[in-house]
Length: 164
Image 1 (spheres, one colour):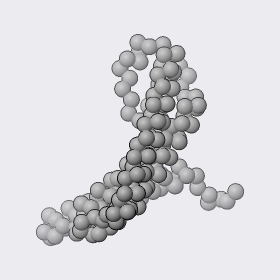
Image 2: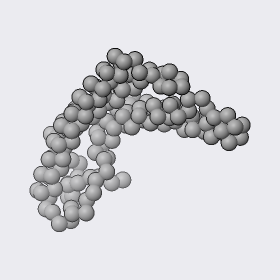
Image 3: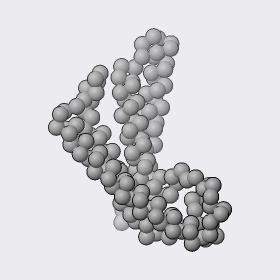
């Protein structure tokens, strides 16, 4: 095993952090240019939109693997551990199939975007690579969700989402 070998999750963490930094930089440059020099960043909105899509879809597998999705647990105190465990498994199954279905739809859309050769309006950046990354990331999220169906939760006394 190589010393510098990275896991896929570490790579996604790096990509997400890099995209977030790029998004921050784009916004900073655009605001400074717009308000101090009256010259906004050319294509700033397009770059922001693409960066947001990449950030959301590269972070989604990370959030899913850590079971850090937003959960509303107002009724948890009224349920026993067995009911909570059943509902958590049911939610894992439903989410896995929903993510897989969305991934299928996004992949079909990405193929259409690639066939049409769609680009952004100002900078003419091809949209297909971003769409394919989105499709791949949501399918990866679905696969992670399928694994989570068979992975016991870390909590022992309270079977529900973890909070840190």
